[in-house]
Length: 282
Length: 156
Image (tube, rainbow over all chains, first blue to last red; front, side, top):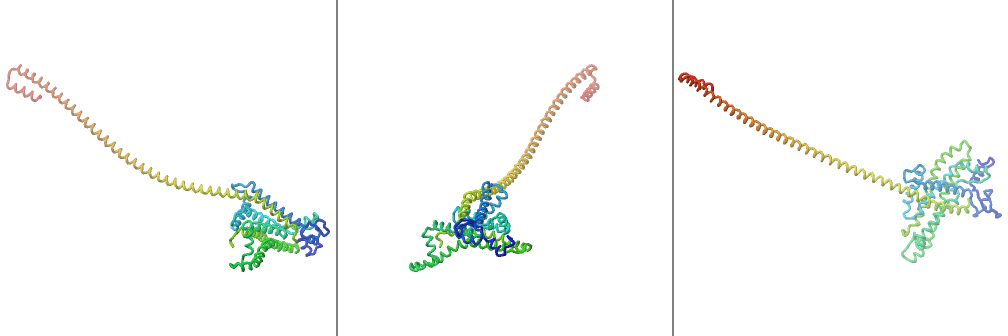
């Protein structure tokens, strides 16, 4: 446990608080000292730990892959290149199966999302107290090391995908086609009057399903990882000698969740992109 | 746990990472994979071709071998025939030669006998002359005469 004086709920709350930099109630930009203060900072604040870890992990991805890409040999691949190529082929085949149009952006984006999310999820397997304790010794009192347990991170990615999908929708179908898709389905009629009456109903239904996509996309990843992290924290509350009986099986199970969630995030991204490119099949 | 600027920061870093990946990671790796795939398929088809030409060469070899066998057989047959011919010729020649030699020998024998007869005739005539001389010397004695003739006859 972080400190002997902490109660269980304080410990949990401590572990679920981000290191937040923002403007406090007096209008001063500073790092929040308590969870309460962090909460009060509102929108004009930034989670330094989420950003820091996610960017660090992003750079690990970039570094690893570009190192291999720079000296990629067409002959017999070495160990690391082999692994990287397996991931590339895996992504490539998934994108080819799901995405039936040509867009040079989709496959690299799917690769980035998959590997980056996977790396961020992997931080969940680092014992919950190690890195926060280290930072605590250095005077930093809040440190959440799993970026995907921060809804800002997952929603940030899913909203990027959403806006990109809107962009490609309008680009491929035209504004008319896009609006038509929102207003003339699922209910349609040959009678013009009924058609007009049905527009608001269609708009409501399609609008909900459109907006639900980025939210469910982002929150699914967040929810899974947040719950996983929460259970690790709860396990850490057990007496030291008993922790392994639960943490080991949960960690093993969580390896599956980590990969699965990264995969689902990537596949949904490709599916939404494919929908944005499907013109005139309704 | 509240929504804040992290959202936008994350979106920006996501965009940057995707851009970097699209620019510097994805193209070289996929082109390397594609190139390797091509190399492998080229190698496989080359091996296929090699296999095919090997099969063809085997068939060719088989064909050439059987042809060579037939030719060899022909040569042997011809050689045998030629041998027979040569033998026949040789024996014919030998026969001719022998008959020639026999003829020559016969001629020689004839000549010899002729010569012998000649010399015999000469001897005989000499003997006749001698006998006549003896008879003439001893007068004409019918008995002796006859006896001398008889002697001559026996001498001949």
